[in-house]
Every structure is written in structure tokens, then in C-alpha cells.
Image (cartoon, rainbow, N blue to C red; front, side, top):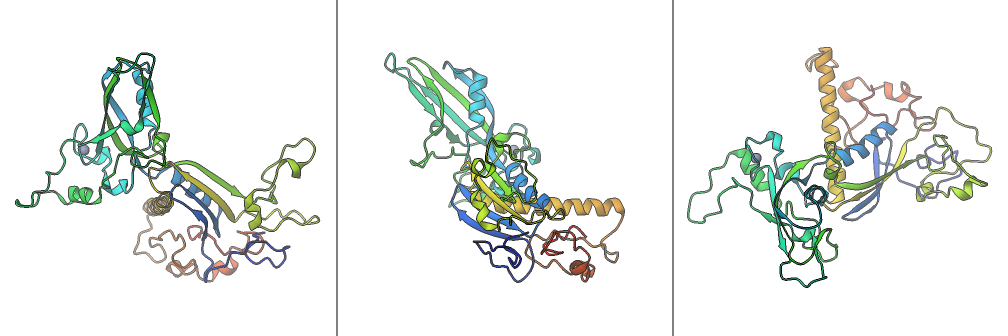
Length: 369
Ligand SMILES: [Zn+2]
């Protein structure tokens, strides 16, 4: 069923993906730019592929404005609406997991250099022409120093006395952290926040924190993730609604080139499961999309390791007992067979039904033992 595993009993796929030396999960990157990546995942289960999609969208941290203090707002936009718009402005968030502490992990009371990026918006149109408007855009947001930062470098004095944790944040801080996306890039148009007419002004201070999209969608580093499997609908997970002709009204996606089309007299394989997944992720510019994918996989590995540890704690199986050691989730770097020595010999025959025809136990998640 997987068009590019062997293709012997298929009509022959038009795109062949070479297999690696092992039968591990595989990634084929079809295209990659700063803001968009298109890749295929194969040799894994639907649940794992979908987990990668969800982790990329909802668990990769970014920086977003979360509190706004208004000193003055005489624009026609109410405070609440302007605060909401400010929250949705993407801010540069490269390396935020190391360069900015979560507020919950910080000792400060009201936000400091180590957990908060402060932005200021102070604009007025006092001398404007009657009947004209001044557009207020995200490019007018200025990052200002947050309180409690490290002292400025002094070439003649001793180095600043910082704790190792603080020093790590200082070392990992991206110099552009918290800047609105596109501020220093003329190719990216700014985001319109409000329009001022003559005599109106806005003066506000924003606090931006590190967060994830599980708390609020504004923290998502991705604007869209397309996810598809089984483009020919051989598994019949989808029922197409059509008026006269199903094929004409539901054209095949570009991913269909990666799988062999169904034969007219092909019997329905009720044991078949999807094994190749096509993802297309679009970033908002806060984090390069390549970093989002890499961090997402790291976070997923960590989460799975935590599940294994929790199960081991709950069941009382400890590391020293035979066969019960900590199994690191294997995302494709190591070997599927032979984890702790007790998967060997089973993976060839023991899990034959896991992947329908052609797959056997290959690509079985090492977590499913
Ligand atoms: Zn703090």
C-alpha cells in the first residue's frame, strides 16, 4: 500500500524515495524556505505523525504581547481591541526557549529582563492635516529595556556577577528578540494597528512573555499546517460528496505523485493503514520554520520520555530491573531492533499486522512493544 516502499505489486509510483539502511521513520524534505516547509514522513503510525503536527503548532514557544498598560489612547479604537491586536503581532522569537525564561520559572514579581520583553508605542498626530489619517503599524513598536537586566559591559571593571542561570539567558538572548516581525525588512509589509486623525495620540507599554499556543493561539509559531495521507483515498477514510463526477470535482493533490494509483479491480484491503504523511507548514515569521520542526520533534521526544518515566513510576518497574530500563523514544537516529535486547526477534514476525501489506513490523514505533 505504501507506494514507495517497493512498488513490486503496484502500478509503479512516479516518485521513488530511496530507503535508508534501516527501516526507521523517514523524512523527505520537498522544499524549505524561511517561512514554509513541505515534507513527507513515512515509516511511522498516523498517531505519531499527527503528534508532530500538533506539537509544532501548540508546543513550540514564542514571545507575544500579553499585557498592555495604556497611558493614553484617544484613537477611535477601544483599549481592549487595540490590546487584542497587539497580542496578535508576531514578534521575533528565535531561541526563545533558552533566551527568555518563562514567567512561572522566574523569581521576579512584575516581569524582569530575564522573563519579559517590554515594548513601547508612543505616537501622536497633533500637527496633522484635517481630514487626513496617520496609519499606526507594528513597525512603530519599540523594544525598550526591561527592568533588572545585567549591567552594561564595562571594559575596565570586573565582569558582572550573574548566577549561572542568568548568565545562560544573557548568552542565549537573540539581539532581535521581541522585535515585531518585518520591522527591519522592507519586503515584509507592517501590520496596521490603528489610524489616527488630527489631535489624537496613543501612548502604551506592552509586556511580552514566552508562551505556547496551548494557552493562546497567538503564541503559535505556525499560521497553517496542511496534513494529508492516502491521497488516492484507498483506505476510504473519506467519503467524497459530489454532484456528477467524483474524479472531476475532487482533483488529486500534488501528493498523489508519491503513491501508486489504485487499480480498477483492486480489492479493498481492510487491514491497510496509512504510513506516509504529507505535511506543509507555514510560519508567521517569529521563528524560522525549520527550527519549529526541529524543536517540535525535540519536545515530542521529551514528552514521550516523560510518559515512559511516569508509567515506570506507576508500575514500579525501575531502571535496574531486567528488561525494564528507560527506553528513550527513538525518532529515527538509532536502531528499532534491540532496544534493551528484548525487541530482537519479535519485530520480524511478531508485529506483522501493524502495517498492512509490505510493511510488516518495519517502521513500528519502538514505543509499541
Ligand atoms: Zn522575571
